[in-house]
Amino acid sequence: MTARPRKPVPLPEARWPTAAEAAGARLFTPVQLGPIQARERTWVPAMVPWRADEDGTVTAENLDWYGRFARGRPGVLVAEATGIRDIASGPLMRISHDRFLPGLETLVQRVRDESAGHTRFLIQIIDFLSVRRRPEPRTFFERYWQPGPEHRERLTAFTEDDRWLDAPDEVLRAWLAPAGIDAWSATLTERELRDLEYGYREGVNDTHLPHVEELPRVLPRLFADAADRARRAGFDGVELHFAHAYTMASFLSRTNMREDGYGGSREGRVRLALEVIEAVRERVGDGYCVGTRFLGDEVIEGGSRIDDAVWYAERFAGAGLDFLSVSKGGKFDDAKQPRVGHAVYPYTGPSGHECMPTVRIDEAGPFGRNVALAASIRAALRAAGHATPIVTAGGICTFEQAEAILARGAADIVGSARQALADPDWFRKVRLGRGDEVRRCVFTNYCEGLDQMHKQVTCKLWDKDFDATGTDVALSHDGRRRLLPPPWSPDTT
Ligand SMILES: Cc1cc2nc3c(=O)[nH]c(=O)nc-3n(C[C@H](O)[C@H](O)[C@H](O)COP(=O)(O)O)c2cc1C
Ligand code: SF4
Image (cartoon, rainbow, N blue to C red; front, side, top):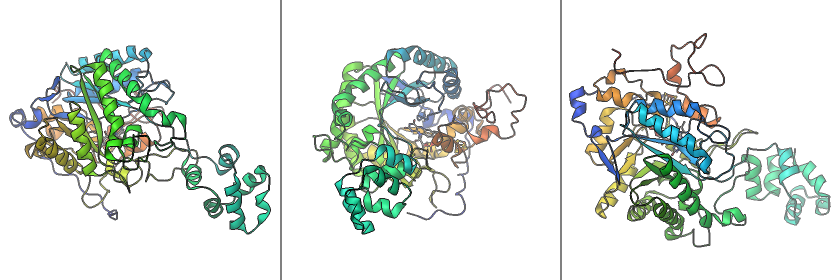
């Protein structure tokens, strides 16, 4: 890995267009996403804001959040990764039951109103497996660990003391809990050591667990049900979340070793994704927009690379998806060890840094870092006769960057997540020839730090020159941060 430079890479200079120039720009031309048309090629990718109820219901804060993004009138706004399973998962939105429909309908209406019908509103739908917090060693050994004969033999070899062969379980647990890493490494299996050091985490290879074994039988219906709810709630389309650290991406990963026909070879790894797409399409029909977000590169040892992604993309396009959004990295495999009591977070290792790159990532910097992946996928699709639009994202924050990406045919649509978080009005400001008013993201990931702690996501720039004392502006739970970007109106001069 490249050493991190001491100094951050500077932001690209921005030369903003006049309103007349913007009016002739590719960025502001319409694009077809299967059955729907977006008015322009600007796109806000999914971002979890941690604003739903504990049971996943849409709150007033969700309405304000998405309404605020809609006011900037991007071509497409994608709602956060929304759970398709009816299980508690904290303040992330859920679409796992019809009881969530009223909230989601209100959300759709709010985006429609605030964007004056300009913005297409999609929802990203996700499945994820269980991840527990890193336990105290004592808790791990007392509650989660079951000693067996192999452990006893290994501990005997490590300590050169054969009393462990028939010592009671409680004695082993009590001795090991404070014993430290050398004794743990010598005694535990690789998997047990990972559970102790990082917290218990399920993966698609855990086919000894019945609910993991049955994923291929369960997920197509769950995705189809969720997509149908999205359609009934009025969303313009769905984005199937096949990216980052979650279930579907793990099926696509080269690390998927399942032997039930859903792993191993590329054909095996893509099989569930294709079955999900088929079930969704069958349920919502050809007249509904369905696309996916998937990885151009997992950026982990032994993981899928761009050649896999190109191969998958051809299958996805052949299966009739209406857009492909290309992301990168964001895996658990290389994530940093969490502190005790915290859960492992997939954006803390090298693959995570690629997913949400900062100005300190390396000398190349974060700006347009992932575009080459989208470009390879797009070129291969076009060569195979598929016109499926490709979305790219990653460090895109100026008009000139976006325009150049489109001009050279690297992608059809330009996504900007953090730049849109820093300033959701930036699209509109550029269109109006008022680019010099854009609040520019500095790509240091304060927002991502909040996401990691499951705190309400905000941008540090919103609070610049802002004093919360005595104000009636909506504040975060800690009372110190604005919950929404400062207001801006095209009427202000
Ligand atoms: C706070 C936060 C939450 C995010 N949540 C999601 C998510 O729910 N689904 C997803 O696919 N990507 C998510 N991302 C990744 C972004 O969509 C995007 O791919 C990434 O930030 C790189 O693009 P950017 O440089 O334009 O920010 C999130 C990013 C941030 C900063
Ligand atoms: S907190 Fe930092 S990285 Fe996140 S949107 Fe704001 S300026 Fe950009």
